[in-house]
Image (cartoon, rainbow, N blue to C red; front, side, top):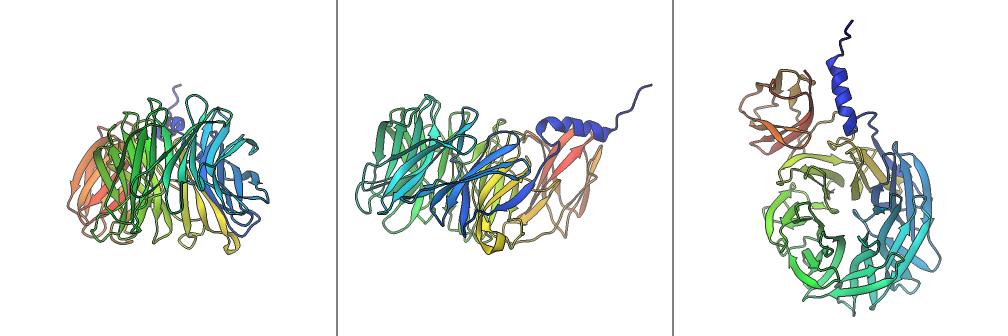
Length: 479
């Protein structure tokens, strides 16, 4: 006798390879035995283990946190001594290499308050296997360290040749942390390197910040060859207090910059992605934000299919967010996040990483247990959802929570779309690779569209209203 396999089971089986089986979510604060601590950078070292490094503000030490796939603490360590005060970098600055070790850049202060750039390598248990500090001027500060193709390390940050002068610092070390060369880069303003990436030709791209003497700042990018010789340097955005940017090289050889810009349209700062060519010329520019201050807090991630995920903060709400873009810069979904206490659990987001199953883990700090400032970790799925089958609706100009009805879900042949109020706009359906498969214009409170031509699988939809309303959600198609 032939056994009939239900379509819902087939759908579930198809979803297993992309990591939706036994999907674990968590949103937790982590309290160190101090009043104030933070987690500034996070990396997935396996399917089930994640490491975050941050700061213990009470004793000035580096925090090492290791948690499992449920967010349960496995290892907590503080690296400190009575003679120094440690500052780790923040953002996507924790890098896994050799399958088990991780590297981070930062700064270390002595008892006189003099800073030196810091390079630290940990094993997966949080034990320090390499620690080096570097000083070439009055002060030097490290923000980001990465392993290079020759098994050495590169570190960027700020070099202070004299009081009130800031240059971008670039340090190259061998595999043992021994100095091979260092460079400083100057211009008429004060500039700092925030992150560094080794490029496909062995050169380096540095994302940074340009500070004017008037107090304004703007994103700044610098490109060097493999020995640190300057090839080009450029600034981006308007001359406002826009902050810096982070730079990565994309798989097509171009570069992606994530930062913020004030366009003078009454929306304050907006989070911005710039895609630039090999000479730093802008290919496209994408802004996202509301009337509140939004900014990218770390470097974006290019996924295997060429799509892009960026992460940042909305300052007025004290909320974190992730946005996914197609390779062409079209926004696919956006989610905002608060701490485990909801909107009252205000947080600052510092970094995120992509998980082996396609999900994401986010780190930061927030008002946690007993009102203290604690480290924060949030794990979401590949659609950015902090819970199963979430849907998010938001407006660019207010905090509306009107919901759009999309049903049935799962669907087979037809899909009903019910709009709140008199909403009108474009409804788009994308496959899991971010490819647009269906688009329709909505001008009524209810519309039915056919999906008989779609293959069985997972899709996500996006609505962009004529009034600025936006919404995203997931849809399962069964046959």
